[in-house]
Amino acid sequence: MASPNLFEEIKEALDEFKKFLDDNASTIKPAIAPLDQLTGGRVSELIDSLISLLNKLKAEVDKLDPNLVPGLDKVTTFTESIKTLLESSKSLLPDETDTIDDVIGVADIVTSLPSIDEIKGEITGLIDAIITHLNNLKS
Image (cartoon, rainbow, N blue to C red; front, top):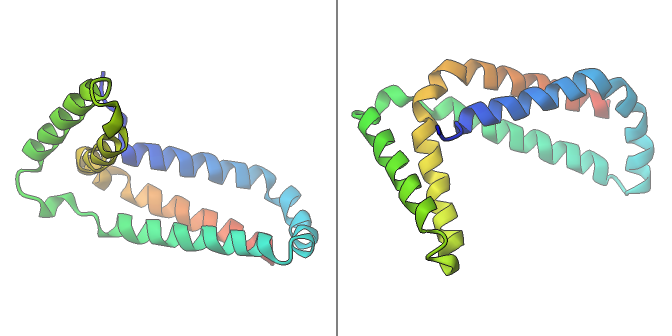
């Protein structure tokens, strides 16, 4: 079974969130000001924090260029092997689950890297659309 592709997962999550906002922003917007008043501005802070995180995600995605990595195909085979080995070892090393998950997280990024060129534009476009929605919710 092929491992899930991190960048595809990010794109799908962004797409789902954008579609939710497309369908529901007009319903959510009138609730923002009263909720903000009830929470002492924390709803606006939540939206601002989300916008900040999305901008950071976009910046990280923009920096990724798999063409700069020589031998990437061999490295991704290496990281796929690491993931298989570590997943198989989890039950024998229950006290190391957090460390194993951290290593698998890095391996997921490397393993997914070759596909980023295919969907980089889609990811950044979705982020931009979501940020526009979020800014409109506060206005």
